[in-house]
Amino acid sequence: MLNFSNSYSLLGDAFYERASPTPVAQPRLLLWNSALADQLQIAAPLNNDPILQAQIFSGNQLPNNADPMALAYSGHQFGQLNPKLGDGRAHLLGELVDKDQQRFDIQLKGSGPTPYSRQGDGRCALGPALREYIMSEAMYFLGVPTSRCLAVVATGETVYREGAKPGAVVTRVAASHIRVGTFQFAATSDDPDNVRALADFAAARLYPEAPDSGPERYTYVLREAAKRQASLIAQWMGFGFVHGVMNTDNMCVSGETIDYGPCAFIDDFYPAK
Image (cartoon, rainbow, N blue to C red; front, side, top):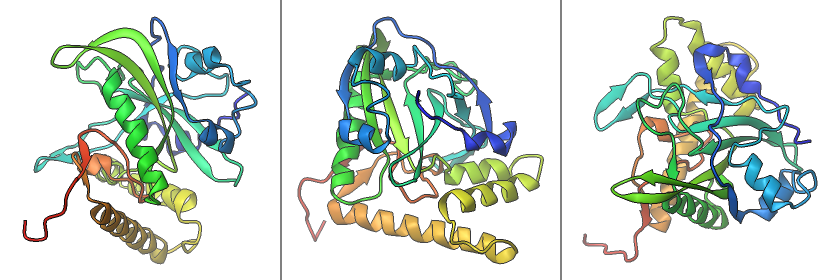
């Protein structure tokens, strides 16, 4: 038994669409982060069985207490606001509490279309899945706050991205998937209480030291989110990391690095550049 819960569902269905992963043809485990699995207390329940791991983390077999959903958010991209972007190829399975009693989101990426896919296939190519695993682990061991990858599973299927590519599903682990774009989405909704509800949820999940009530609670959340993002970007610059899609849908209020799509580490530093 994997002890999933899903506190995000308490926000109400304005913030997500329930959606299940689409099964894949031939799931095969390629990478497994055993240290992270141990920290999340799931190594023993899975019996270190690569076939079972591949079935679960491809989306073919869902744990009984998982509650898969696609999250809604806006994205300010290329100077334009897309008011309803959302997870077009990712499913939040739920949350796990680790050995230190910290709560983490467990999300499948490349697990099939969702209501936010906009005619996309909802899949991920193997190359980007491997990149996310390698880059996020590098960032973690450099000491920079980041999401991490638990698994990469080959799907046995082909995706088409400027040619035929092997497909994969990557499992992302993050303290939260609440983005700047999630607040943008709440602010553009028909219900003004959505922003307050999201801020209360973020405070309880990410900023437990925030005041319990009153305007100070919300100004604390705003200041802390800004502080964490400023610190994060300063660390990126210190290591020469370039985030290729640093839009509001890819900036988390937890202050973690998320979305290793187009990205790179600069090889050389030229002070006169």
